[in-house]
Length: 511
Image (cartoon, rainbow, N blue to C red; front, top):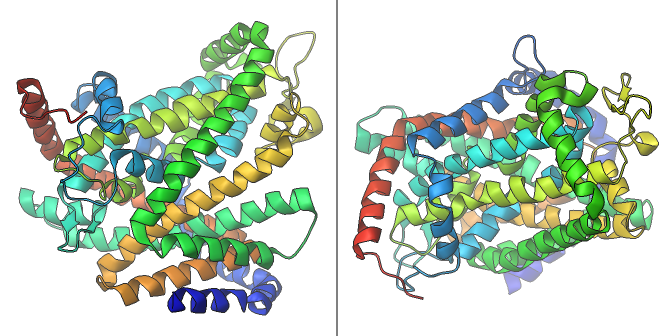
């Protein structure tokens, strides 16, 4: 308790320091732009002759490979996934720290967020309604990637005498590579951990705090960002100081609340416009193959859909494998089954809801003579009501039905940001302890550092820093997918064994 009070005092006393951060924004931005801009450009570079980034293609191709290799596991294993989340096969005596549902909620809290709110609006705004179709397709294939990485995460995790566990790509890179007699596992693990820490501090931390402050100040009026930062830092520290069990206890409540709230509002709007639902789906399906007059046509819709799906559900990034490794189970494949639900919930359900509301509410401008969407060449997207984009477009769409929704959206964005931060604090912590060793003192150092970066992120306008951090997230994917390709035969063997024992009754139900 004394340590907690001391840290709160430390954070609260950083107001002047955080305020000074606003004065050095330009210097920090310039340094990052000068020295890391080339790397950011490399990671997010488009394929020649297209506006489709190679990193998105890297993730989409991996999803296709794993879908074929595991015999469309996302389809034939979906029902069993639901049973596992309900706890039907959960043995309370198994090693681990959290339930299947808690692990799922923790991982979802890291993916469900601004990608579902703003990212979908960007995709539809550029690629038209048809982008939604390809977003769903990519999400369905991404389920197989999540299955692969989370099965490996549990199989090669470290279990300690006190009951806590550590797992993730860095562990299966070392142990799995050693099992198969492959070189380079430790080098890949170290690189992955470095990318994870930097990504956690930036994309999983500062960016979230920055966006949360932007939404709150938009409702309450302008005020110093460090105030939001200190509040978020204190609350975040109070949660993460308790470890994965504390994080899971929060995410299992916050994530379902956020998801259900968002879906309910979306469903209400769709029911209010039930006569247009068929038309909206028609726009989505026709747009998927024709583009409906959008620049880029079919290709534009496909590219935007695939790109936003890859960036939204994080299948292949490796972060989910860290969260799922803490689950209570002795069967690695069970967590693979549970994890495949994440892209379905994140991309297929929530993203589709957002897209349908945007299409139905008429915030996308349509030429009355041709019936085609009006293209804003200057902005590089479809013309919209008020010429807004991103989260503002989503807010405008929902406000067509409920004038008060922007206020609730601001609250939702804060909750999304908060849940993402606490999940990424755990991802960063596990990478930190892998590099520097386990121990309470080392964990506290990272947790305090993580909370300090929340204040900086909320107070400063660190554009290039955030860009670099996002590049770190997708650098994780480059390393992780290589490992998945080399280790997928092990997953296939685990899957065959599990299915055989499930059919024979050796694996029994507990509920």
